[in-house]
Image (cartoon, rainbow, N blue to C red; front, top):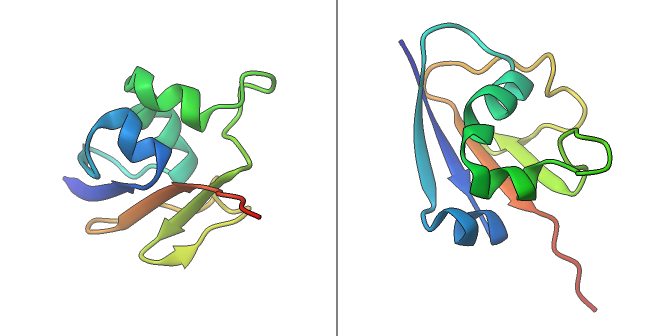
Length: 94
């Protein structure tokens, strides 16, 4: 069994009403599969994670795995036991 923790920041945390989700996987998944197969079950997260025009993961979400930025490799990044995945919306200010 693969256990991972997903940390939610900003609007994602507010939408879910909690900062962390504990996810158990029965097999290896890519980071993209984890988001699409497990996290999108939470309707409150879907509107924040998926671009309605493209139906793909939004480009304004920062994704970290064990505090390491994952930019274009979400399809090849395999989730491992004990990984801490952080999802944070990009915030612009002025």
